[in-house]
Amino acid sequence: MFSIGEFSRVSGLSVKTLRFYHEKGLLIPARVDSGSGYRFYNHDNAETARIIVALREIDFSLDEIAAVLSEHDDEADILEFLDRKKQTLRERMRRDRDIVSTIDKIIRHETEVRHIMKQTAFEVEEKTLPPVLIAGVRMKCRYDEVGKGFSQIARSMGRHLAGKAMCLYYDGEYREEDADIEPCFPIRKAVEKEGLSVRELPGGRCVSLVHKGPWSDLGRSYERILKYVKDHGYEMQLPSREVYLKGPGMIFRGNPAKYLTEIQILINEGNQSSPGDDVTS
Image 1 (cartoon, rainbow, N blue to C red):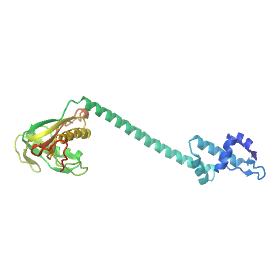
Image 2 (image 1 turned 60 degrees about the vertical axis):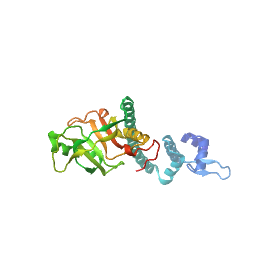
Image 3 (image 1 turned 90 degrees about the vertical axis):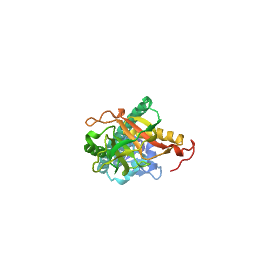
Image 4 (image 1 turned 135 degrees about the horizontal axis):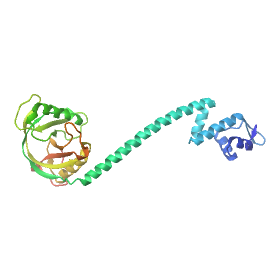
């Protein structure tokens, strides 16, 4: 048996700490003298003390240490627990690295977008769109699936194409899976093709804004143009339009930071309300 002073040397724990651990039920002496109250420790106590010291060094709380000691019978059992803990920590570190990498990407992306927006001289403008002959294919799909429609039109119309690709958006809201979209191209002459709608797209007064940058950031430009529409009390007409002035080519994707997309929202000036009025659909 070791006195508390002797055991302090054996365990590397101060007498004050040993008393505290006894009070917490972490390290109970092998014997406590009933008369004097002196504490005495044995070899098993030394093993437990070493485990406590090791767990404290890796930032286990006293409550966690108490749980480990109560749930595991011997040192071998605790070593198995620590091995499992190590694997859990490695997995957490991997996830944390992935999170840090994602945060870095978000920071880089937001920094680039803000730089692009500051450098962009495009402003919201009003203009009159002329009627245009188009070939389109109406689709219910995700937004990233419109390429199939453009490919279908290009294969069918070939040399009759006469302008930039555009999309008509018939929804007044964002849709995740079933957006009502019509990819289309201006064409030189009315040539009927199966599966395509060939017609004249009406013109009219519109509010327009050219967005510079990747399509994933179009929401920023929609915010600007929709604010303009509301501030001027205009009534929006569907479908809205996106004209892809500059984007990926047939072979090379190009630099998304340099894509140019013109957002066009037709307006009904006949039902114009005063700025600030509540306009409901």
